[in-house]
Length: 87
Image (cartoon, rainbow, N blue to C red; front, side, top):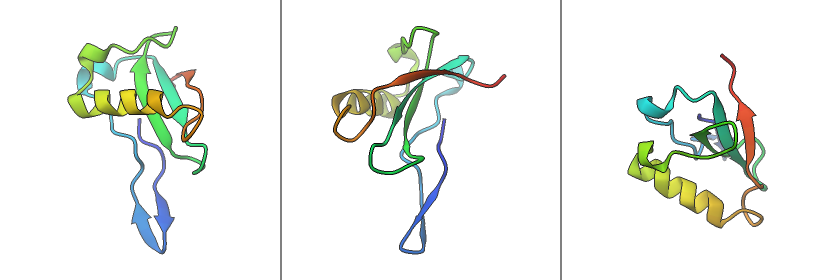
């Protein structure tokens, strides 16, 4: 789920989050890693109520982003939080 866009030096800057593929969008939960340096930015991935991400349903790029997010927890990103999505 994309986060808000921000402006940097007067130019729009896209969020670093990629939209999940259609097969994973039906999930009622997301695993969210918030940026520690830039409010409103981060990564979010479809998951179940326990925070389990179905890696086989993610695109290669989204899967790479997931592994990156896990690798930089505590340095660039917060610990992940499971959030229920609005229906």
